[in-house]
Image (cartoon, rainbow, N blue to C red; front, side, top):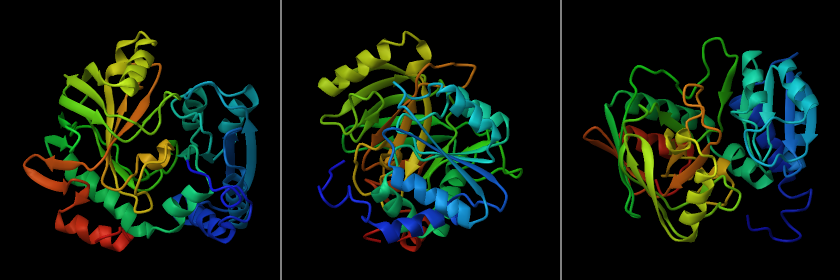
Length: 349
């Protein structure tokens, strides 16, 4: 991120706006009920201001906040220090602000098994919290997620192209139901930041060319890309990686795990948070750049068992659901989606 010395790093930066965003987090994004046990965790790379603002907001709502810091893990999806790992099993809600996120790791699965709601807020700082939570109109943002899921799940195929040369067609798993809203029992699941939706990819069936031209993270050596990374995809697996230095770094990193599932496309997501108009290197918001498509590589379900998961961003996406085009170079064009973009406050609508 670009830091303006003397502004962003000061505690008073967006102090009032941060309080409002934290209140919105615990009332609209993930409502906290009186008496709930709420774990707020981060690593030593996290922004303490958002963690304490969240703790205060939880306390105001009648929940019991517990704030835990731990050393930054060497990689994502790792087991945290033992006291942190045990803390997750006592939480009703877990807000995870760690930069080296714990999602898909042992603590994450333990929390879900104990019925906790895991809220993924990896690397969130004051600026991101204000832009992605505090400012957007959240009701139409949630409705956008619902409609994109319903529309894409009703299709047999999803085709994505970009000006960078991407042309990838994926099959939709219409038998799998994993919507971007809370299950009826409202426990034991992961919740993502608003401004993203998805369809369920039928793994081992995608073909074409996937081009990351925004961000790839992890590995830590990457982030905002200087040059596009071009991936050849056959039957859902990455079979070739082409490009310049960023592509070589990415290829070597995947090779180091010596596991076939690290090359399998795991998920595909729509990005549409009106507070995210450019990439920053912080994957949580980069996945929600307005008009992007985001893909996860490395299938983590137990039947595949990838030891690592990475996410990449494709900017200015055009999207077809079967023969119906819903987005054109980063702008949603289906009339009902256009109306929701206007309602949520998306620019230039």
